[in-house]
Each structure stands twice: as structure tokens, then as C-alpha cells.
Image (cartoon, rainbow, N blue to C red; front, side, top):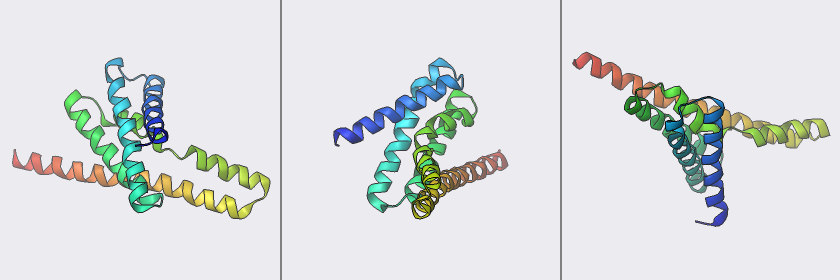
Amino acid sequence: MTAAIIIQLITGAIGSVGFGILFHIKKKYLPLAAVGGFLSWLVFLLGKEFWGNVFLPTLMAGFVTDVYAEILARICKETSTSFFVTSVIPLIPGSTLYYCMNSIVEGNTVRALEYGRDTFLFAFGIAAGMSIAWSICYFLRSVRKKQN
């Protein structure tokens, strides 16, 4: 791993902890938020190397992050939302949205459309990955209830 990738992973973890503090999650869960941010960005970077675009790596990272949050929710007896929200922070497309808006202000329509497309693909990838994971977890819980 290069130093730049390690720095990205560490800052993803720190950012997740920062949002965990902002969202008032319990202090004992802050390290779990750090692991979640690290994990989500790691999956995204690996997916970006493999697929090279934005949507599929974000979908995979959103899926893995939600599975991570669901597992932690069961272990810690908390809601999965608090774990998911803090862990998904590195994937939020803030920079692409900023560059999209900046390009609009500058009148560069072509660049604005490119950044807008990437912003949408990031957001849609997170939502799709999360929805797939939630659906699978819901299905597994309903099967388990029927067995009992």
C-alpha cells in the first residue's frame, strides 16, 4: 500500500469518529465507527482498482458497510442506523458535488454534467448497496422468525 492510500484510510476512520461525536453515539462505539469508516473506504478503493468507475465500488462499499452495521447492531443491541451513518461518511460525494456547483457557477456545463453524474452515481451506489443489504437482512430475519 502506498502512503497516500494509508492516509486516505486513516482520514476516513477519523472522519467517521468525528461524525460519531457529532451524532452523539456512545463513546464506547467510537472505535467501531472508525473501523466502519476505514472499512467502507477500503472497499471503495479496492473496487475502484478492480472496476475503475464510481458506481460499482460505491455500491459494494455501501453493501459491506450496511452488513457491518447490521452485525454490530445485533452484537451491541443498538440500531444499525447509527453504525451505518457514521461508517458511510467517507463515501459521501461532497467533493464531486462541490466541483459540480463550482462548474455551474463558472459556466462550464460539460464539467458540471460530469461531476453531477459522478455525484448521482455515488449517491445512488450508496443507496442501492444499503437497500440490497437491508433487503437480505430483512429476509433472513423473517425466515428465522418463521423457523421459531
